[in-house]
Length: 157
Image (cartoon, rainbow, N blue to C red; front, side):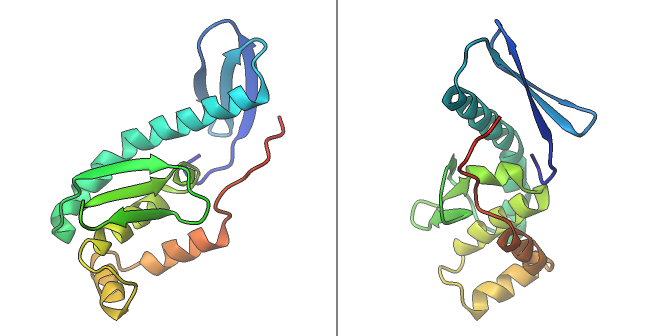
């Protein structure tokens, strides 16, 4: 979560699902007794989504006046091949749920990247110039994301 590795500790109880991070090394997921693997995966993804929904609005609000664009809508969805995408006409950005697992700097880079697309549709020299103007270290964040897997499909716990 947020670029750090955590040991996932699943505790079974009769209460609703909860998450606790302990000692910056363990993510405790409390789930109902008898829950199946697919249910636990769904609960974890829901938690990731909730965490992103807490972080993203402030990042968009921070960058809108800097870049000079208005994001009218943003959503989170699971994507297999992209970290983010945007609809220029609707001024809407979509962010990959997997970004919850990446560092805040990587999340911020993707938000800025998609917002810059509201100024320049294509990945051309002008786009790169705008990225450098707004986020001089953007290439480092891109490299970090490119070194890591987009997602993990197998669940074993």
